[in-house]
Length: 112
Length: 117
Image (cartoon, rainbow over all chains, first blue to last red; front, side, top):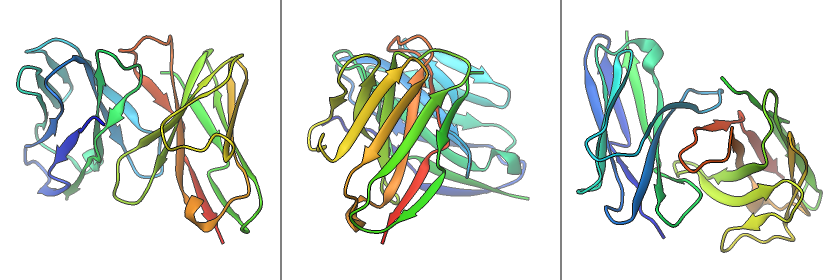
């Protein structure tokens, strides 16, 4: 069983603050890492798919980095806004698997 | 972006009844769809992979006779929870990759909240 862990489990920040959270995954047999944003009552929405060690991807105020050798990825949000409030999920694919293994998510609440 | 719909969004049923959940890809064809289950405060757990035109592949510990999956067309997969019991109450969600590659973004439905009384 693959272990994908996210921390913290939940987070409250003030509007305008920058924040980051972590996804840890097995460092051996890496294939790809996905990040999704899941707003309440909506479908999870893809943010990034990362495949290469050292990858850094950016989408507006959100960016992510990847370290496959040590088995972690960081998601950063710069200048958080209330509309960033959501659960952020990471999902790992190993070299031998076809399916995603999800972490339990980080629930972000941005207070106005 | 690609759109996946899921119906119903919420269902309450009596113990012993069967419940069918539909997952549709609205603007692309999906030869593969995935069904997940989520318990409170836990991660999405893959239940099965639905394959168009062939049998579904179930994850270890998932009863195939309990959770029937049919992928009859390139845009529709259904999950039927047979003889539902209160322990089947959960959040069920489907996803589909647009082209089936392992790095492909998954497009998710909005999920179905099942409550079995």
